[in-house]
Image (cartoon, rainbow, N blue to C red; front, side):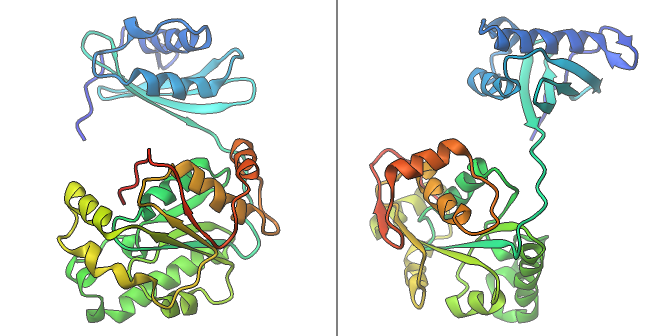
Amino acid sequence: MVVPRTVAAVSRVDGGYEGDRQFLRSLIDCVRDQTSLSHLLAPIADLDSIRAQLEQLGDSEVEIESLEGNELRTDAVVVAEAVVARIVFARDIDGLLTWLHAYVKPPFFDGVDGGRIIVVNGPSGAGKSTLMTALQSHASFPLVVLDEPEHIGTVQPGYLIWRDTAPALHRGYLASIRALTSTGNHVALSAAGHPHDEISAAFKGLPIIRIGMHCDISVLMEREQRTGRWAGIAAQSLDVHDGWTYDLEFDTTHGPDSAELAAQVLLVITSQPDQPPSDPSITREVERMNPPRASVVEADEDGGFSH
């Protein structure tokens, strides 16, 4: 990723860049007062995203606690009434905002007894990655997402393509995920072709939520071509459900809303003992929908499942 160069600092006051400090203050005030940001943004800036991120600060007065910068970006810590956030942004040579990311400090999480592992299984293109991303977006607790068990660190690609050449390596991946979960964490994991017996043995004794993703083969093949996946992988992975039983099953043929599916999964997670509360808006939506357990859910068309 090429990051645009920021505008040079106007002056330095108490170790901070006064020009960038004033600029950030203007951004925050415009969002709080619901006035236009256009005069502060470069043409490439994502107005909706920037406004949504700054709206996380709320309506109270915001103090810029610290601010430092270099030629590539500016980093600030801001404090509002009930929010602490780190805001990172860049400006172009005309002083206009090119991008901004706001990271709000999450609530304290001391772990959950036994941890929780969410295993998502389905053919390539059924929506496993999309669902796990939605889960992470809506969870009010730390959720580690692994698209595949092998996404811990890196290894030579051949050992990932031909797993049978290094069985100890793949046993180790699953063992490390078990250790992460058993220390009190939530982990969402794609089964990625690992059979049910292998997954069950690796995580025996841990609370596991198993989710099955289904999709019509014609849609899987279209997604395969559109997203540039390995040729033929959709058809080759149709038998991934053999031997599996699930707590929840979803049919993504018509592209259901990933947030709705994530809501149902989060309800299952938070219904177990010793769980932190989920996002209230998600819980209310699930209660309204009152979805059945262990059933195939096919939502309306209008979605974006592609992984």
